[in-house]
Amino acid sequence: MEPLTIVDPDLPIIDAHHHLWLEGGHGGQRAYTAEQLRRDTATGHNIRATVFVECHSCYRSDGPSEFRPIGETEFVAAQAAQARDQGGAPIAAIVGHADLALGEAVQDVLAAHEEAGRGLFRGVRHTTAHDPAPMNNSAAGAGLMADPAFRDGVRTLGRLGYSYDAFFFHPQLPEAVELARACPDVTIVTNHFATPIAGGPYRGRAEETRTFWRQNIVELARCANVVMKLGAITRPLSGERWDRDAATATGADISRAWRDEILWCIEHFGPDRCLFESNFPVDKPCVSYAELWNGFKLATASFGPDERRSLFHDTAARVYRIAT
Image (cartoon, rainbow, N blue to C red):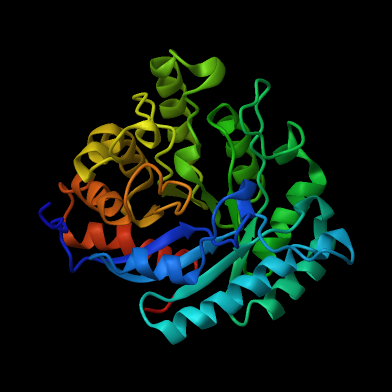
């Protein structure tokens, strides 16, 4: 087999979203630690830094429940120190979990994250993903983004200089728009293209989903405090199931399946409000790390050097306060 040709190998990249866990974490999966991440990021692309995003890993097993997620930040900060010793791309930012429904009282949890993060803590993801016909609901119920206490928690993030990573499903886009309007001083990072769902009750309704998604992406983009994270290719509206195929996807496959959605987001948010993510290792059964970034580069080949640098590096550096 011929070695993979890396597209635009000198383009600097910040991988704006990945996870880490020990053996048995994230539903019993095999470990994905700083060592596995180092191997993936060293496969040819110019990965300058990465951003860890919470995945309920290594929580504390005792103490007040609201402080148990601090264990994950402690774990990742230690992994980041290990990554620095190993060389390669540094884990340069941590997005942890905190219960934003605590309202202003969440500031005590944020202070504990800050201390545990060894200078890397940048923000919070409190997932609100919920659908009446659930596949993988992450939130206990609907309507969390409209809850006054939750909104106070989001505003507390902004007041203290932290960002909010928002993970929700595409039918919840109108709720996300209202949250962004209600919290204009908070940088809100929309995860995973706003997670268009292709399975379950939405199977066979790709065009309906795409139309709804596009209309509401336009509305979300009108909120100047929102940026869009492009990635998580496990739910392509084209119906691809690369994780079940004999061979994983190529960069050309990724570009073909996701190019229209990528370009739609960039058209409305602009390159300075879009950033790319690997979502590894969740997406690893679908595609190799090198092919994934090839796909993102192929999909954005029409943009100039400055725009591509924003998309792949500068927006993430600004949003997560990373110096590279």
